[in-house]
Structure formats: C-alpha cells, structure tokens
Amino acid sequence: MWWGCVQAIADVHALDWRALKLDKLLMPDRGGQPVEQIVDYYSDMLRWVTSGEPRAELAAAAKWLQDNIYEADHLRLCWGDIRLSNILYGPQLEVAAVVDWEIAYIGDHEADLAWLLVTDWAMSEYQGFPRLEGTPGREETIDAISNCRARRCAIYGSTRCSSPSPWPARCLGWKPGFALRGCSPMTSNSSASVSNESGSCWISAARPKACRSSRSAPR
Image 1: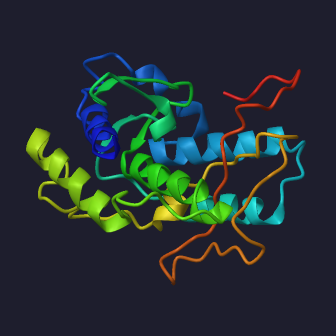
Image 2 (image 1 turned 60 degrees about the vertical axis):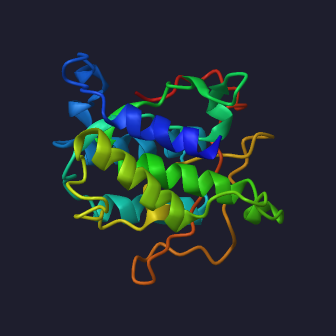
C-alpha cells in the first residue's frame, strides 16, 4: 500500500498540467511565482481560521516561509493532501483512485512528499504510537519516489534530487491546520523550531476537515 501511494505521487507529478489546462490552479493575485502564491494562501488561511490570532508556533512558521521564498526548479501539479487515507485501494491492494483534491495547486512537488512523511509521523510517533512494523522509512521512501520520477520522465534529472529545496522537509510539509475537535491548533511540541540550520522545522498539523464555520475560506 505504501509503495502504491509513492507511485501515485510520482504519477500525479508526471502529469502535464499545462496540457490539462490546470493553470486555473495558479493564484497570480497572491504573488509573482507559485511558491510565493501557495505560502500566501496558507498564511491567509491561518489568519482566517484563527480569527487573526494564530498560535505563536504557526505564526512563526508562516513568517519563516514568507521570508525564505524561493523559485522552484520544477513546477508540477501538487496533490496537496497526499496520505494513505486519501487513496482508494482495490481487492489486491492496488491503487484504484486518489481523492481529496480541494487544495491541489501548482508548485514545488517536493512539498507533496514532505506532507506524506509529516502526516505519517504526526499520526504515529507524534501521537506516541510506533509506526507499523515493515513501513518503509523516510530515506527509503525518498529514494523510491526519486527513482519513480526518473523512470517516468526524469523530473529530477537523476535518481536523486539534484537541486534539493532550500526549505527543510517539515517546512515543506507545513500547513496551517487544526485538530479535528474544536479546530484547536496542534503542533508537535512547545519547543517548535522554524530554523533550517538543524535541517528540521517541527511545525506540523492536521488539515481542518472537521472545522465548521459560517465564514468563507480565502481563495
């Protein structure tokens, strides 16, 4: 199931979003290039869903991302909420469909992989539960998706990413999110870091799927 998910990510990223006329997913009113646009969108969402009073950890993460905008080497269709629970599997555990596309965007495809790894961590070790025995680890997963992409259309130009993103993986996977109950923000711990010096940025949360509000979300 895990490797089917990894292959699904590579397949999505190999799609020609221009030929599919998905340029509508760009948000030019939010910035001059796609990475800036999605960061502005999520920052706006964070302010909206917290009534302008986000937790300090999330506000700090948003500011760090805004201050460290970069131009992606490759622009791809990004799924936006990639995880096992958003995949429908067939009788032989083959991928039958991928669902939950409401936050799809055009941007740096490394963010999708980061989100898969972050949500896997958030639903296991963060909660105090060990990962299921036999579940591939972070490095093994990164190697596998790099190889998938290289076989499909040489997105990376080699079996490894030749130009890794300047953002730490957990910052790439950052989304302003909230626990399912009460829309209360959930972060990994009180000593959250938004520095890339150590190669980690411990800002992580679940998407606000159960949040109900009469307000209209920003777009």
